[in-house]
Length: 483
Image (cartoon, rainbow, N blue to C red; front, side, top):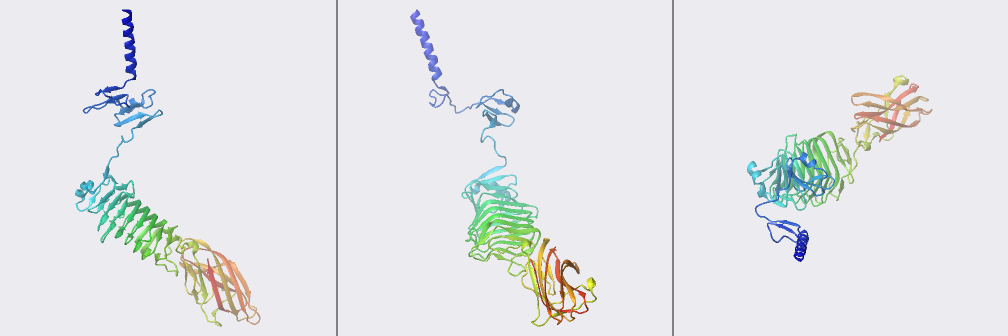
């Protein structure tokens, strides 16, 4: 009997040891060798503990890897050793649609009739190349792709984006090849915004038109192989950042038309080879706020700007600040102007004085001609008018030659300043220079130097004063430079 008991006890110990080392199978007699617990079923699942958020966070010293289902958030949570985290992929975005073919936009086409009318509260993810059978009315929605090289919207011979509302477009390639192909044909009501970033526009008949929007913002856009560029019309705030136009684009890359509050282009480049021009600004009516082109590289040797500047050799009016390689700098800091007396050698213009001292001060007579004017206008009669938009100081240099008709008279010469709203100038007494008429009515030469603050519309002239004597003078040469 004792021997049998020992055999029984040994058998129990062996069974327990074997059980501790074996796998457990539920619904299967052959559990997977890599699994400690293998539950197999085709009709049932595993039900984890379910509790509210308050109950989950109240678990005392949860073990690392502990998992529960939060009934308040309807999400599985696990404890990572320091805090509770939702399982990746457990949370789903609301108002989302994955677009892998035009069939995924069947509901939108039914809603729009002849266009894909997007839901303004939905994010549309483009996945792959989508051949469109109609234009997309973005309708305030957001269209994006995860891979701009692979996520492509194609509309052969037609428009990709139309409609009168704004929206967002990011991370896709857009192509509208063939006659009639255009990426944009959008006209807003002046309140909508268009955000277009991290995209490429390639091999399209036209990039298209965007008209009458509040904000149009392009950021990091590549244009390649397009036959015609884009026209922006009546945009309150047009912001173009890091747009790149390759040399294989044709036509005019960017055309601006109408009225803008802000028109800013910065970064990127325009390579112009066979194109008509990079930018056409002749249709701009006005820029109410500010405009400028900063650090955009223009190269390739073609025609860069179709401009409407009143200043010879420049491209823009005085409402823009231009600092970009390849085209002339155009800012108020670069403003300069000059004039010279337009008179034959041996002749001059007579200036007559009344009395002496301050009461005799008068503008010197003489027809003058501007030679090198940028944001200055020469009025034609001893006057330079500042045509910039910002107040700044200018160095003014004048050289003057004259002949007196009364020996030993002494004259004082000044730079004078006025404003187009008030035709009377005031001499700057700090610029005064004295000169005496010699005993043989000799010709005197006078330099006048000054630093003058000019605001838009201010003008500068050369004035004289008879300090001692009774004679007058004949001005035979006069040159002024302000820069």
